[in-house]
Structure formats: structure tokens, C-alpha cells
Amino acid sequence: MGLSDDPELQPLLCVLFLSMYLVTVLGNLLIILAVTSDSHLHTPMYFFLSNLSLADIGFISSTVPNMIVNIQTHSRVISYVGCLTQMSAFTLFGCLDDMLLLVMAYDRFVAICQPLHYQLIMNPRLCCSLVLVSAFVSLLESQVHNLIMLQVSCFKDVEISNFFCDPSLLLKLACFDTFTNNIVMYFAGAIFGFLPISGIFSSYCKIFSSILRVPSLGGRYKAFSTCGSHLVVVCLYYGTGLGVNLSSAISQSPRKDAVASVVYTVVTPMLNPFIYSLRNRDIKRATFRFLSKTI
Image 1 (spheres, rainbow, N blue to C red):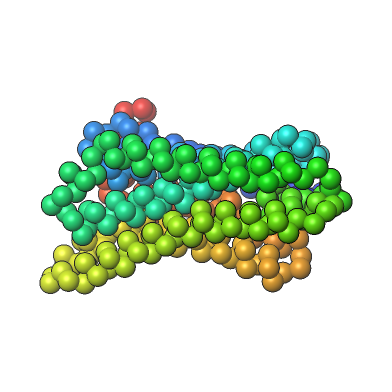
Image 2: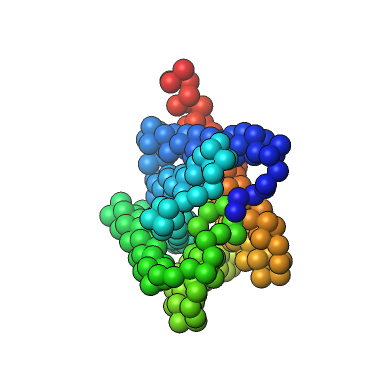
């Protein structure tokens, strides 16, 4: 359905989303290149951060390029296979964001609550294993959604009330009762969504408890500053995701739901590089070093 039918708005939307897409891709690429080029940043925290940046690039690339092409060609048609592919990619990278935020919360928990054993616990083998498990779990969730949608062979409508193929909206188009499919989809979503957020919440409860036991104010600030950026990204990611779900449940306007989805799918991945780079001196130094070498 897209975001607007107003022909005068189409060029503006195209420029706006192309700019946001380029900023997101370039910002996350800079973080990846800065981390890989600076040996001082070859630590678990920055290893997970570079993987999160890669996931953000995939997340925004699953929806925005297709929307820009649709605006340019004045066509919003997508094939059945293309729709399933977009849905799978969107779910895969969205879940990977979830899992990596959980892994990063665990990394901060070990760094703050068990600092003497940090190097021993967060060894390269465990870090790679955590990323691989995150990728496997994300792939599993995306395929669960894919298998559910493959069961739908008849559609009562062919208009998706958003600018991308949202799994929940696709099920609403089925011309038969999808109660069982909905139960399976929401159950899978609850498991893959509840486990990361509960793990993050548990980690931060222990982190805050440990920080409060630090006697000096300076020591507390230093300990909290190591997880401040991650906490901001977690609040932004889950806050916008919750806002999208609430707005779709309350609002009866598909256009408003689509606009709310923009914040979750476009704005959040774009802000992540700024949050980490502006609040992190090491990232800023590494980025300037990399750019000076390149230029």
C-alpha cells in the first residue's frame, strides 16, 4: 500500500528514505571498518558491536531499497516469492538484532560483575559461538514464519496495508481461518522475543546491583558508562517495537500503522551508529584514524 498516494509527496519520500538508507549503511559500515582496522578494538564488546552493525544493514536493506524502487517506478507490486523473501529477510535480521543485544548484555554483565574473569570467560571461541548461535536462532525463526505463510494458498485480498511484507499482515489476507497459524506464529514470536528481553532485563538487574555496591561515585559512573550506549539502543529498539505493536492494536488507520513501522524499521537502525560513536571515545578515535588513512 505504501506510505502515501499523494504524487507530490513521492519525490520527497524518495529523497528522504534514500538519504536515511545511505546514512544508515555508511554509518554502520564505518563502525565495522573502524573496529576491524584498529587492533585496540579487537575485544568482545566491539566484535559484537560490528556484528550488530552488520545486522542493522541487513535489517534496513530488507525493506527500504524495495520501497525506493516502488516510489521511482510508481509500482507497488511484489511477487509472491519476492514477498516471502522480504518477509524472511526482515524476520531474520530483526531477530538477529534481538539476539545480539542479548549477547552484548551478557558481555556487559561479565565485564562489570566478574571483571577478573572477563578475559577467561569471554574468549574468542565463546564470542564466535554466541554469534553463530544467534544467527542460527534467527534463521530458525525466519523459517518458522516462512513455513506458516507457505500453508496459506488462498488470499481474500492482495493489498498489504504497509510498505513491506509484514508476517502478521500477510496472515490477515488469508481467505480461511488462520487461528492455528496465528497461535503458532505468536507463540514463536513470544519465545524468540521474550527470551532475549528477559535475558537483557536479568543482566541489567545484576549489573545495576553490582554498580550500586561500588563505593565511589566516579567508580559507579565509569562502570555505568561502559553499558550506557547499549542500554540506550535496547530502550530505543524495544521501545519503538512496542510502540508499533500498540499503535497497530489501537489505531484503525493502516497509513498510521505504516508510518509507525518506519520508526522501527528505518529510524532505529539509522540512530544506532550515532549512539555508539557519539558516546564512545574509542570508536571516535578509531573512525578518525581510519578516515585519515583512507583520505
